[in-house]
Amino acid sequence: MTIENKVVIITGASSGIGEATAKLLAGQGAKVVLGARREDKLKALTEEIQKTGGQAAYRVTDVVNPDDSQQLVQLAKDTFGGVDVIFLNAGLMPNSPLSALKTDEWNSMIDVNLKGVLNGIAAVLPTFTAQKSGHIITTSSVAGLKAYPGGAVYGATKWAVRDLTEVLRMESAQEGTNIRTATIYPAAINTELLDTITDKNTSEGMTALYQQYGITPDRIANIVAFAMDQPKDTNINEFTVGPTSQPW
Ligand code: NDP
Image (cartoon, rainbow, N blue to C red):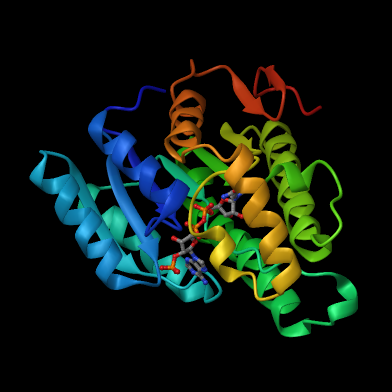
């Protein structure tokens, strides 16, 4: 699938990885449809893309609300005539030790990082199934591959994203719907993600880690572009590259 003229929905597009991906893909001729909660950021990004000759539309979207995800898909259809790719990337990471009992933050992470991804899949899957094509890309994390103290619930949501994206790939192969998947596993990316941490010790520790190891979000945007820009009969999931027809 080449990138030019593809209609790509991006959640979490108002900053960080989503914003960098929107700019990169729009610069390569994709039509990007941007969702997040902060309208000022989405509007500014849309205008910036349009000023440089790109095509973009946005809708204020809370991925926790299933109807918002449905409306974002509808916006893609109304504005650009369809959907080819959805990048389910919105997320937050208010890490803390379990003993801190920040149960509201646990629930927010489950709502946004897990249910938000499911809401996006539910919104787009009927369209992709009917057209027998489509690409669902999710943002997991190294925390979806390995356990980290302080990241119990965040990691749990990212392990879940890993699992459900892989099952989606297998079921698509079994059902013959030709839906491609890719899961991205970033490590330390310098974005606004650490701003959601309210636990002082965790915040200080992670800030120091990111200062030492953090890389820029355009590095992840490049990975998304790479995943999109593969021949039709390949499917990228984690470290595996293989034909979509193989459900393993
Ligand atoms: P940012 O905080 O910069 O971006 C997070 C994005 O998610 C923002 O656009 C935010 O927009 C959006 N978002 C948060 N809650 C909601 C919601 N309820 N509905 C819609 N959008 C929402 O961080 P990143 O760019 O780093 O994060 C992007 C993804 O990458 C996340 O899933 C994160 O877990 C993952 N990741 C990040 C890593 C890192 O080191 N930065 C490492 C591994 C994974 P708004 O507030 O406007 O709604």
